[in-house]
Length: 213
Image 1 (cartoon, rainbow, N blue to C red):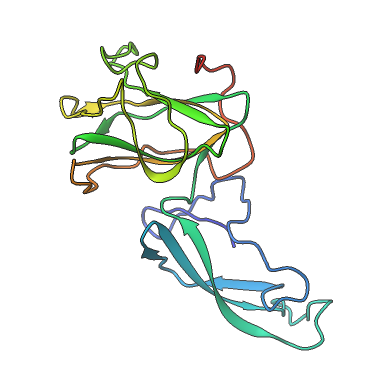
Image 2 (cartoon, rainbow, N blue to C red):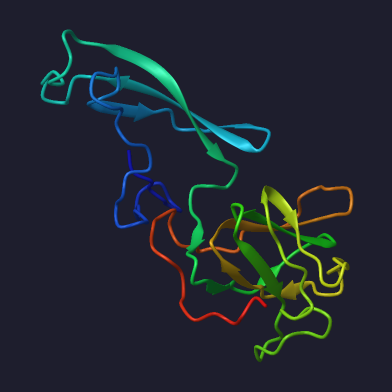
């Protein structure tokens, strides 16, 4: 199953060089030859549940080689919230600058997974690309962990209410970033994703980023 994106339900683009989003099951499984997903994922907390129907019979009625008989069934795939696409940074690091964002809320949050040894920092530049005072990479607190709502702070401060429209520059090493959002102090989401981002692929992002040290 591939990931298709459309704004009018008529014309689709397939990000990630048409890589599978949900692969067939292993040999001998009920979904080894065919998968059909239900159209709407179900949000459960910080996860998206994708229910699908599978079979070990191909479209041409060819039975999977390892199977002894036809098999059909339904199952569930689990994706992290907003995890359809992501910017992936390898150990050499990378940098990503969003398009301009208009937002409500007081706190910047990232959907970020740095694993154990990864790290990230965030800068907010002005229209000319210069870091805003108090929101530079040097002042950014290091991000480490795995959360769909990792709060970004600069020397312990995270209030971004004075910037109602801004870009975000994210510099990371060995990390995966899926989305950007803004929330109020009470945690109510009020932002928009920072897309478009790299598909959830194995390719590193931009090379030679500014140093994280």
